[in-house]
Amino acid sequence: MRVLISSKKIEVTEALRSAIEAQAQKLGKLHKQISWVQVFIEHVPKKSKDVFANKVTFEVSLPGKNVVVKNHAHDMYKAISGAAESAVRQVRKEYERRATLRRKQIA
Image 1 (cartoon, one colour):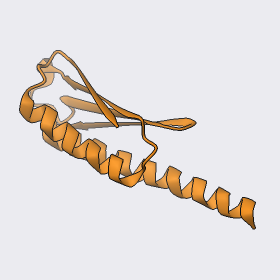
Image 2 (image 1 turned 120 degrees about the vertical axis):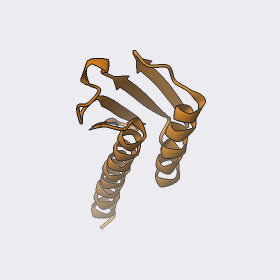
Image 3 (image 1 turned 90 degrees about the vertical axis):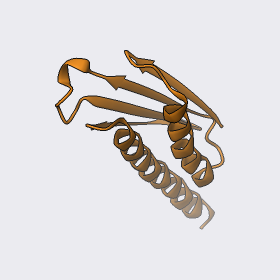
C-alpha cells in the first residue's frame, strides 16, 4: 500500500509524515486490497484561533470505489487521527457490505 502525502501552504515535516503513515497503516491491516491512500493536509493561517483551521482529507482506493473522508480540527494531529478513524469506519463498512453481498450470492 502506497501512502501519498500532499499539502497546501504547509511544510510536511518528518513528524507529520510519520503520524500520517502510522494512521494509514491501520487501514492496511483492515483491508488487504487497498492499493493507495492519498492524504491532503491544509492549514489556513488567517484562522489561527478557529476550530477549523486545519483540514485533512484521506482518499482511500478500494477496488471499484474510492472512500473520501475530510476532517477539521484546531490541532493538525487531531485532524489526522480523526480523519483516519473515519476512514477506518468507512472502509470497514464497505468491506462488510461486500461480504454480505458475497454471502447472498452463494446462498
